[in-house]
Every structure is written in C-alpha cells, then in structure tokens.
Image (cartoon, rainbow, N blue to C red; front, side):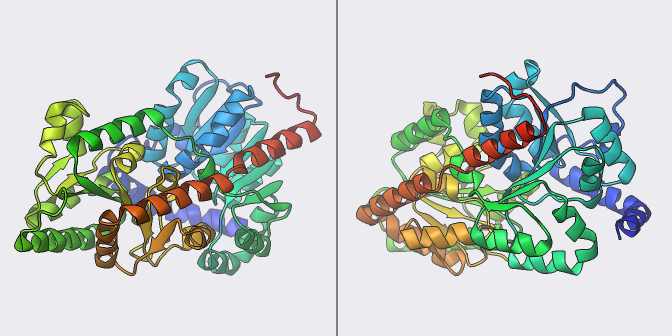
Amino acid sequence: MRTLYSLLLRILSPLLLGWMALRARRAGGRWAVLGATRFGHYGRTGDGPGAIWIHAVSLGETRAAHPLIQALLERGHTVLLTHLTATGWAEGARVYATERAAGRLRQDWLPYDFPGATRRFMRHYRPAVGVLIEREVWPNLVHAAVAADVPLVLASARMSASSLRGTLRLGALLRPAYGALARTYAQSLADARRLERAGARQVAVSGNFKFDLPLDSERIARGTGFAARLGRRIVVIASTREGEDALFVEAIRQQVGQRRARGDDSGPPWLFMLVPRHPERFEQAAELLRAAGLSHVRRSRLLDLGDDSSPAVEACRDVDVVLGDTLGEMAWYYACAQVAIVGGSFAPLGGQNFIEASAQGRPVLVGPHTAHFEQAVADALAAGAIARANDPDQALRQALRWLDDPASLHRMGEAARDWVRQHAGAVARVVNGIETLLEQRGRRLPRV
C-alpha cells in the first residue's frame, strides 16, 4: 500500500504542487513551494547530528510546541524545527531568532512525503529523535525514520471520531505508520483510545501542550493598558475561519444598529475586535465591514501610530471594530477584551484553541463544532470556564449580556484560570519521556 501511495503521490504531484502554489499566492509569506529542501536537497554537508527534531506543521502547532521547545532548550538540547506552511515558519523564526543565531535551534522545511525526499532528510540531519506535534503522521516519513533508526514520538496527539474513520478506511497504509511510532502521548483518554484503534502502540495520556503555553506578559501588559486608556467594553472575536466572518459582521451590524436606534448610553460603548485566522482573509474581512457600514481601524494601523500611544487610542475612540490583521498578537487581543468568542467552531471546522483566552481569565464562548478540542471543551464547560452558543448571533448577544454583569465575568474568569492551572504539566511528562527514550538508546543527555 505504501508503494501504491508513493506512486499516486508522484502521478498527482503536479496537481498537488499547483494547489500549494495557489495557496501560497493567496496567503502570502515565504513558502518555497519548489525549494530544494522541500525535496530533501540541501546543497551543503550534513548538519550536526543528534538534534531533537520537532515537526510543527503550521501556526497553531508551532505555538502549541513552544513550551516543549523551550523546555528542551533549557535542558541543553539542540532542536531542529520543521514546518509545512509559511505561517508556521514565520512564527518559529520570530520566536526563536536568538536561538537560531546562537546555533541552538535550526529551522527548515519538512520535505514532501516522497520516499527519496524523506530518506535524504533523515540522512542529512540524522536526528536523535523526532517529535511530531498533534497528528502529522506521514507514511513515507515514518518509514524513512524507522529505516534511519530515528525513533518517532507523537506528542499532544489528538484524533477525532471523524479522523479515526478516515484513518481506518486507509488502514493498510496508515496502520503500519502509527504502529511504528516509538511512543504516543495523547491529549485525552478518548484520543488515546482512538489512536490505539488506528494502530498506535505505547500510548499514554499526557494532556494538551496548550495548557503549558507561557503567557506573553509584555503583550498582556500593553493590551491591558491600552484597554484601560480607551475605556470601552471590548469583545474579541478570535480565530474566525472561512464562512464565519460574514456571519459575525452581520451580528455586529445588528447589535450596533439596535443600540443606536435605542439611543442607549448606559455604560461605555462596545468595541468589537475581529481577528481572522489566516492572513489571506484580512482584506475580505475589511470589505465585509465596509459593506456593512461598520467603521473600523486595522491593528496594523494602530502599530503604525505607536501601538498604545495616544494617537492609537484616539483612533479607536469612535470606531465599531478593530480588524486584527497581524500575526502573533493574540495575547494582546485577549488582554484588551473582557469577553472572548473563539471561531473555527461556528462552521464545521473542528474549532480553534481557546485555552490562551482562558489562561488570561477571559470568559469564552465557542460554537457547536469543537471536535478538535472535544475533551478540553467538555472539561471547560463542566468547570464553568466557557459557554457554548449555537451561532454567531447568539454568541454576540451572550457576550454583551456578560459585559453588563461584572459578577459573572469575574466568576467565569476565575474558573477559567483555575481550570488551566489544573490541566498543566503535559510538557514535563513528554520531555521526561523523550529523555528516557534517549537514555535507553545510549544517548548521553546534556548537562544543565
């Protein structure tokens, strides 16, 4: 089956690469779709062997992997960090600029899953161990790692019921790949059971890395200060995905129109922050706001004015919406707001990470589609840390009710912080597992 898969991959590669090029053109950023390293060609001698290789496919996985990478660096390990998307690469380059300059972390593209490309990748880097974040199990990549005697760990792993069905349909191809993993650390017991059905062995429940993400205290301080100077009640609508922006813009238009029609001046006026998940939709969101007659200012404009300067504050004084058109600033948006609505869950897309908002003590609303965070959502609902809404209109109305109820805001905020604290510790469990695996293979651990 793997041979057939590889043959089909080669036959379809012009279409797949064309799709990647189109995606890159729409999204912008550095993709290197036809770059040599995407095919396992490096044009230089092999980089020093023995690094711990971490694959974080895109932006979300790169952020999720941050506490793991930080812990490994603090323990003296050298890290090789790979990605498939431009947003993942940009985040890694931004966060680890100092480590890259010092040679403690190297960043590269993961090659496409061609047999030769993955073999060349393993031969060039010769990592001591590979760590795949969340769900990046590729048949030829796993086969090449096993052939090169590189143990693979699947960490902070998740598998929804629908993903399991798809995996089982490709059982003859994917079961050997999952079965070849040295260890699998699942986010929840439900994930662990599904991963075992998919073929994974040595499965343990370690928890979700996102609970261990360090808070960006500098951005939080700037966001909190900005909101205090502005003096408006703020709702952030974060990580919206395809099809959701239009629904939220319409919901905002209705609420703003009703408030103006009532002549309502009870308390400071609302401000909404709309933050699309992907950069290619920033312009689309701006056009939706213009078409709806909603005044807005871009976050990039505020940065041009001086971030939390007086001109930036004044630029937000009378607008309806701040359009979040920057990357890596979610901590600032959450710090500004009193309530967070987290997108990706109001269309059948599986949901987006809401844990960062909870860690800041923000009451959170999610939609009905949260399969990617199934256990986290269930636990947070039981803890009273979040609430669920059926659609964007209901979510917005609930958020505005909370703004008028400081006691509920405080109660949910404290519940959210407590819930995050109770679920921390996944990174320590995985790092200890990785180092145990290295010791079993006779690798000397760095001194710290």
